[in-house]
Length: 121
Image 1 (cartoon, one colour):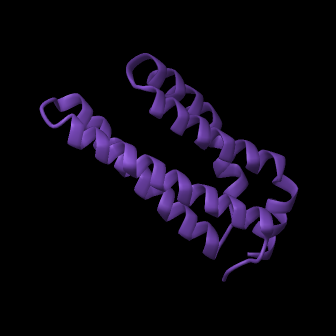
Image 2 (cartoon, rainbow, N blue to C red; image 1 turned 90 degrees about the vertical axis):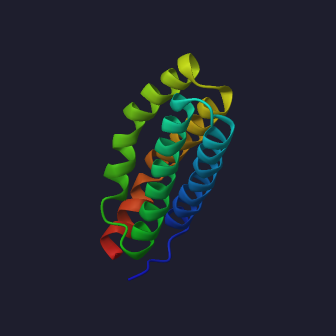
């Protein structure tokens, strides 16, 4: 069952954008890091995370239950990955994580509207 809710549609759009960002980052890491194991590992990890974003977007479109709690739980993990990307990664990883953090913040800012969508869903 799909719910028509502006905040929910925005979160889904942002999750799909995150999917595209991390997919591109992962592919670039694998292609440009072809001669080294570490970039290939991180590229595979980023592609895995990208696919999970796509699956989350599709799942929340069908049934938004749990969206706010899920997004709130991301914040601490995202901060850790921002730090790891700042130390070991590159600016693109920091920016990608910052975008993901903006999604979690958007959910927090629109929690009431999203909780209503969860109940409708």
